Image (cartoon, rainbow, N blue to C red; front, side, top):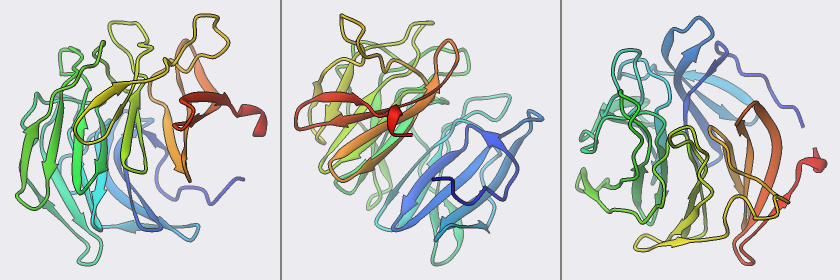
Length: 250
């Protein structure tokens, strides 16, 4: 169902996070190739501009939220990949710098929150070196800790979503190839799951820059890019570890 059109300038590469029933969209790159620092909330089908992001304007940053506070960081400002991070307090309507991300500066990373921590990983550097590391942020101590991964492939522009007490990560691009490996993470252990492409090619979720959302106990992967812009939708069932093509439902 088509919803209220975005009131800001059209863009891609924005960062996003959710707090309660409100979605937040931050920064991004415009069709003029100009990066913007504006920020918006979306509640009850209404877009509202909130105070501008106080970091430099950027694209392909990441966002997550913990306990009613939003976090945005990393990205690319047109000259350099970035490792700074900021938090947004919707009650005070303020942005505040937090501890810098200690990994290599990057863009096209993924982020999620799980168990009261924020997680940021993958992505690419200014020189387009793809990465496979992950870092955990503790908002209580304002500290980052490396947690490592068992990913078979490095990747940029991957996707992630959280169902219950597990995060799920896959997709992206690595050296002009589209990785097929897909993982869950329970806060301690990475577990490889059903691949994003089966041997008979009856399904193929390999792609970069996809969107995701979760409803109930199912994760959904929407669109993305491969040889062209994609419009299909896939549903993941963690109980059966299977993917279902849902694009006919549109």
